[in-house]
Image (cartoon, rainbow, N blue to C red; front, side, top):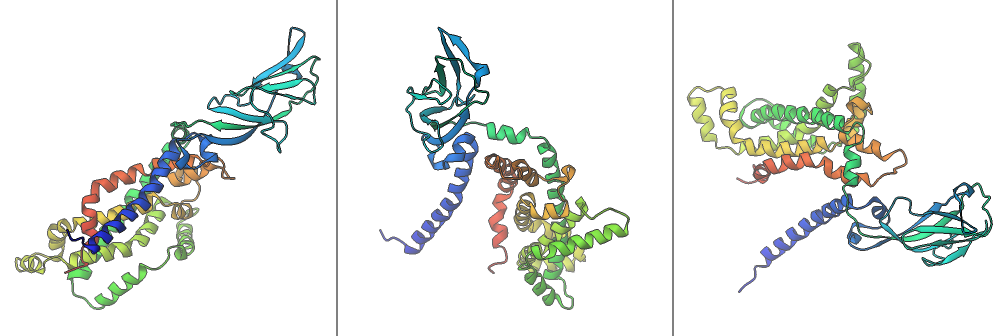
Length: 378
């Protein structure tokens, strides 16, 4: 049987592209379900193996000692309440955290000797009474058994303000998706089927706007909004209306380009028949062109919804860090802390944020390819 080299190459390329997208997503999902101690010391591909980490614990003082059979004893657990670890070794200095094996003893400079077992429990025994007021530190090397948990998701979902940020994201995303679609649909029909001067120049300008980086216009736009707001007596221009208009401006070039190409490819015979019957441009647009253009509308809706929902930069510029208007992406950043601690919640937060876009995508995905390819061939 003859093998088609072109088809084989195409299938291999598609397989590679799918793998490039699937593996990071699978890794993110696995990481979001891992124990945060494991996540901090090893990659997601080691999720089913035991991870090794180093730690330090400060043990009890003289106030914690008890007398048993003429000896003074301090007991505790170097792991605290964490029961998912097992001891590999322990020591008294940072340079030698693996100086002694579990179950063996090390002499302490405060007197007596300390024994640490495999489960982290220690027993510090001395013939004389302890007098120290500051507990010494025990360094250790521990293995972390594989464990999957929903703790990261619980931490994100129960954080103060997350529910409000979900609502804020919807408040920003829905109008910022609908408004540019409506405006672009009217403009696309005009550029595709109406005759007026400089139509070709306007199409060229729209195509040129596709390559303009939005970062160039953020500060000028914000300054303009603030000036307008001050003219009308408001404190600043950081309102929902401002961010709706910003996202509309940034999304219009792509929307007009996609919809214009699609509408230009519709059969001109149906337009001519409608005009012969006396239909106006508005009637043709609303009753014929819009229903036929649904695949292109759905394609752009997916693009715009994903862009606005996942946006952080534009939201921070045009809404700021106000708690009452903070969107979901901004809230997740605030949960990390100023020094980037608690970063393990990013994995769970990422999957929480993509739930809504996934619902939108799978609802409209059958129109996605049809809309993107529209107008590419005759």
